[in-house]
Image 1 (cartoon, rainbow, N blue to C red):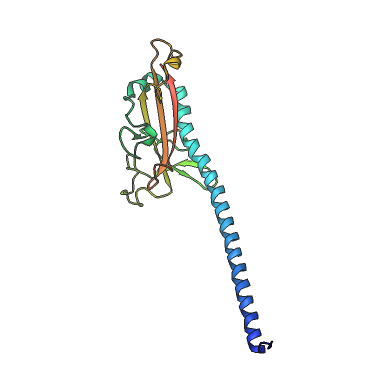
Image 2: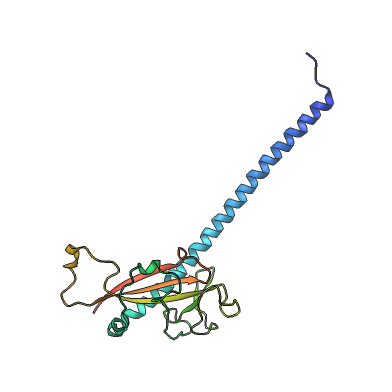
Length: 198
């Protein structure tokens, strides 16, 4: 058997080094991508807490308010479950309450900082549609919108056995809140519902 010339042995060594460097580079890219994804998940978690606070703050204000006015605003529950209705579609409406500085339970427009801090976006004109057609100069992309809906009855029909638990003559209605940014898909919006009985 003949030995390979020394120049071809050097070439195969160089090829092995190049392949090992490529494998090492792929592993480094994978590690960096994993860190980026973890950082994004942590940030999303903080923002999600802020978005949840938007919904719950509005409901907490209702606990102190007259429920009769809400009951009068109630509309028939749509055929499609309310959380599955398109963003901005009737009977959902932007929160009509007057925004107050420092009170996230009022108004329709908010900023959620990466730290999770929520503040009213007082620079957005009232009634501005929260959809992709609204220019960024009017409704910046970092602004969240809150919609509300009041429906007659419970969120879903109760089975007959559970229906007996609702007192005779009681008027239940459901207060829905939804928060999203313009351009968000329906899946990215978060929804909260609370049942009141009059």
